[in-house]
Each structure stands twice: as structure tokens, then as C-alpha cells.
Length: 619
Image (cartoon, rainbow, N blue to C red; front, side, top):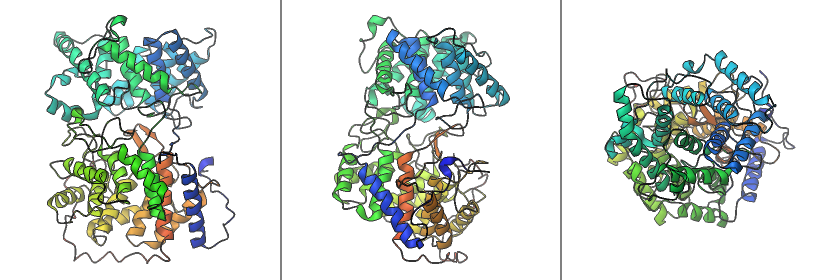
């Protein structure tokens, strides 16, 4: 199999140099690039490719609910969709990504409903026919294994007249009527897409009198819930800072009679907004975030000028590892990250102030992004107020079972948690912050974590693909705790070594996908921490070969938006991981040979997999 162009090894002027010199040169090139592109605030702009679903969702919303000028934006979005269609007839999440059902259904619906400027142009009709052919060849929407994703694809196609809604399983909209504490557990962060799907389904009529009655009672509460989400995340008109989700909600409201008369668009209060006000605010957000080429980004953020926390935090942590922790430029970054800390509670998640989100000071607070920031703050003043508040917040977000979830504590939503990757990262941050290893909260968390090991020795993450990220997080935690000789660590190391390709890289594990910078860098960090110098150096050699002339690396398609369905790449995350890995290796003159992991008598911990543990059990 030939590698894609962006995965081909690059020729470097220092290829004839010894490995240590090459490591130092690669670190210097990467740090130079990151420092040169840092903004005066201490942040970075994270290049975010345009998204097919985001563009299609925005186009649908602007066409169905907007003005004449908005329809021109919708036409521009559809023109972009036609330009990025895959040769197989479908669309992928981002331009050039493999075709998937969600992106293909969204694009087909937009191209069907949004009129072309030239009615005689058959390009849209041809593209829709090709999309339906691709779906048919993939088994149709019925072949989509996830029920919620199947509902989404079916209802979007039905909205465009490209499919029937009658066979779609009912979305139980009455869940919005549950008491807030219980509703949080069963819906979590999925409240906006859940309500959007329920409203879209109502367009086609509720099956039976009981369902119609439930819909009539629940619809006002559903709209109020959307208003509460929009208000609490900053009242900027978006949902999750995402044009796709915002477009989906606006489309659902506008196409199902959930919007009052146009004159009411400015009425209502923040506590009880009506549908028209939500639609107006959503349209304003979509108008403000359209890109010059007519597309919309994936997860644009809350502001017109994109503000993102997570990617810059990975970059800053790597620069700290590379020796720049006390540099004034990194001090400025830590100040900026501290200023992004949320200072108000987020009642929808029963979340106190003190956490972070991916989109600056506004948005959905969550443990995953907060951990990325805390790792950076730990490189500075250990008594800094933002750090102390963040650590207290992190401890307060621990589940009763000892784990950590992403958004809601003790959630019942599998896509929210509990998550072994997040739990391992949380335990490592708390350990590095000085929380004793025998603290009952850490003991409880470690006990839960070690019981999540799959039979093959790996661990699974919710928000990253494949076995590498969570397995690496657990190995780095165990190494920091002095437990890299334990049975759990031995099996995890064996699993990680088995996943390494002959060329030295690691991949997402999906068949046919080549090695990625993200997975390879993570694995190098874990092997180095556990003393496997040979495996780590093979991975480092691959990273050196794939560094581009400007000092950067091509990010892998490793991040998860909808598990098993929608994936994306993160440029700054990949740069941070690669730089951290090479810095860790270049800082030591020689790594020891792989540790003898056969002697585990000194470690007392849960080592056997839990009954029923296996692939996917981490969910």
C-alpha cells in the first residue's frame, strides 16, 4: 500500500547526522515554528479545516429560516460541497476524508433543498444521485449500527424528500420533562441534538395518540431547554460552538412549527426564550462564521474570530517540556489560559465554576479540555489561584465510582463516560500536583481504572480513536506511580508494542490506515517513560522522517466527534504531541533497554480484567 502524499517521508538536510543531533534539530525546528506563530495574547490559531456536515447544516438552516441574503450564503455553501465531493460519490467529515454516512446524508439533503443559482445546472442532481448510490452500496442508512446516528441520517434524508421517516425509531422527546438531575444523567451534553432530532421527527407526525400527546406537552419544554443551553454557553447563538449542530437545531426549529411569528424574534427572556429568538440568534452565528470560500469550519467556537483552548494547550505543554516553561512567552500563555477559566457555574451539567472548555471562556465546561490546561498550568506557579481552583474543580468532578466522565458526573450516557483515558490523565495531573498516592480519591480512581483493561491488554478512550491513546495514558500514569513493573503495565506494554508497525509508527488501528503522528508520538512518550528505549527510538525515527521542512507534522485523523462515525484531525494537538515526544528523548543521552517486567511481586493492585471486559467496554 502506498502512503498518501502527506504521509510520505520527507528528505532533510540533516539525514546523515547522528540521531541525537537530528532529535535536537527537529525539536529546534518545531519550537521555532510554534513560537513564531504564537499570538500576542499567548494563544495560537489552530488551523481548522472546513467541514462537510458543518457546511451542509449551515446551508440548510440559512435556506429554510433566513433572508434572501442568507440564501446566497446557502448557495455558496452548496457550491463548496460540490467542489469537495469524493470520487466514490460520497462525502467525508472533512475535505479529502473517506466518505461516511453522516456527511453524505447532510450534503445530499442540502443540495436537494437549496436551489442552485442556475436551475439548468444538473451538477447538484448528479451529486445527490451519486450520494444515494454510495449509501446504497454501503448498505443504506439501515446499515448504520448506532441508533442515534441512524435516526439523524434518516430524518435529514426524509426532510429533503430522499427517504421515508416512517421506519425511524421514535425519539422519546418526553425525556426533557424529567427532573433536571435525572435529565442530566440520561441526556448529558446530547440535549441539543436530541431535541433537534425529536423536533425533526415531529414534522412527519407522531405515531399514535400517546406519542402525539407526549409531543404536545414536551415541545415547549424542549424549546426552553435549547434556550437554556444557548444562554449558558454564552448567549452567542451557537450550540457547542459548532456550525453543524447550530444548523441542525435551527433547521429543526424552522421546519417544524416551533418558531413563533417573525415579530417575536426579539421577545422572550434569557430564562424562557421562544423558538424565534433562538433561530434569529443561530442565524446570526452562522452568518458570522462563514469562511471566505463559502464553507463552515468544524467546531468553529463561540466567537467570530476563532478562540480555541485545547490545541494551544497541547502546544504550550510541549514547549514547556522542550525547556521553555519559564520563557516570558509561555508565562503569557499561562496567563491567557487562566483568563479562560470559567467563573460562573454551568447548571445544565450541575457544574461549578473552575473548569475550562475548548472554546475560550464561553462554552460547555468539561474534564477533557480542563486537563489539557491544567497540564500547562502545572509547569508554572504551583500556587497560582487558577491552578488551585482548577484542581479543586477536577476533584469535585470525580464520579462516585472513582472514574471521571467528560461533561456530567455519574452520567448514564456511554458517549460521556466514564472514560479510562480521561481518568488516567486526571489521576496523573493530581499526582503531579502533589496529591498523595494514598489519597482515597486517587486510590478509588486507580482501582476503577485498572479494572477497565481489555483482554488484549489495551485501554479505550472515548474521544480518540484506537487503542493507543488510553493505553499510553495508563502506562504514563503507572510509570509516574512507580508501577511500570506491574502485571497491568506488562500487558499494556505488550499490547502497545504489538500495535507498532514495521516502519516504527502507530496508527488508529483501522484497517488500511497508515501510521499517524499523533499515535506515534503518544506511544513514544509511554515507551520512554517505561524504559523501552528501542521501541521509543524506532517511533522517534519515524517522526523525524515525517517532519515537514517548516518544522511541522501532518495531523492524523485521530480525534472523535461522533464515536465510530465522525473523526477529525487537530493540527496543534499533533504538533504538541510530536514535540513532547522528541523533547523527552533528546533530553536524555541514552535510554535504558526495555525493563524486565516479569517481577511484579512488589506491586499490589487489581490486575485481572473485569468480567466481560473487552473491546468497547471502556464506554
